[in-house]
Length: 278
Image 1 (cartoon, rainbow, N blue to C red):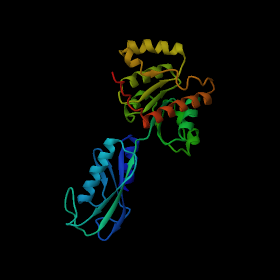
Image 2: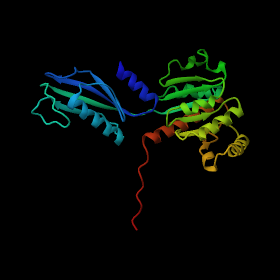
Image 3: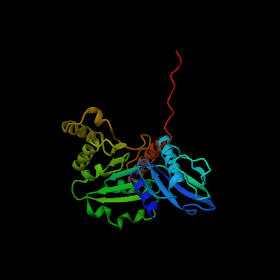
Image 4: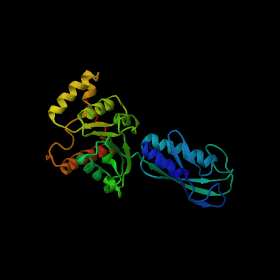
């Protein structure tokens, strides 16, 4: 169905939308109960009947998106030439109720490097409602057998096997993606960090490694033309600072917990603080 494909596309691209459904019909109407359409800020998919009711629904859906509303709403329409109308006369003679359900953008995470830590982290994140991108330049790391531990994933899992130039994937990630760099190769890590810093659409950039590794990377990134302010966008070490341990599962739990904290903050931004009266 067109609306199902639209919802999947918008989810993968982290674009908010509203699902509009005809929930009840009395008398004559352009569409039957259960008909659906999807509205984003820029376009629509499918139809709930056209005319006044659809135009009003689209306008309200886009207002909900602009305002960041999360609660569903119901709109009622009398399809009569004697009924008040906002966009156009629609005189089928029936009554229609529409349900408008906001579809918020889900979090997106990209793990570059599916070694021991990366796979453990993927296993944890896959249990959450998000879009999960797995990237590795080694053919053996992304085989169906190795990734079978994600077969029951709640997340949408996207596998990117790129034998050369995995940093090209960075530019293809959805806006607001959290990037984690943890490959087997420090040169590959450095190239990924540089590509991430040049991509302004990312949410956060995390790098696994020691303080010595980070000191070398800072010098290299600066030599490659990155400003101190840009380099400061990279977080290392990653995870919760008070959860120590070098076991892959422990590191993965720490990193996943920190990401979940960020997801909550994204959904519930802190209210602006008012300045005290003079």
